[in-house]
Image (cartoon, rainbow, N blue to C red; front, top):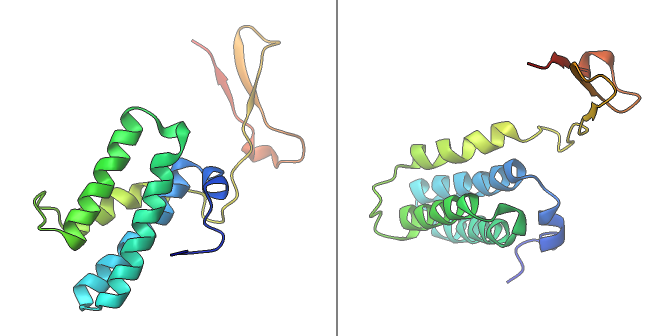
Length: 145
C-alpha cells in the first residue's frame, strides 16, 4: 500500500533527523487522537503512516548506532501503545512529548538555515561566516578559549 506518492527513501533521506521524527510524530499524534476517539479506520491509517515513516528513518544510514536504537525503541513503544498491550506502560502524553522535542527543533517552514563555515584566517578567533546575502543578525562570532 502506497501511503503517499512522494514518500520515497531519497526524499525522506534529504530531511534532518528532527524533520523526520517531527513528521512521524505528527502522524503518531493523529493516530493517538483516532485511538482516543474510537475511530479504528483512522487509527490504522495514521499508525501505518507513522510506522512507515519511522521505518524510513530507521533505514537512513546517517542514524547508525545509538540513534537507530532509540528510533527503533520509539517505534516499538508507539506500536505497543496503539496496537499492543502497552507493556511499557506509556501514556499518549509521554509519547507525544518525546516526538514534540524533535518537531520543535525542525524548521517551521521546512527551510534549513545555511551551514556556517569557520574562518581559519584568524588563529585566535573562531569567526563563523554565513554565506553572502543573509541579514547581518544571522552572523555570529565567538572567541575561542
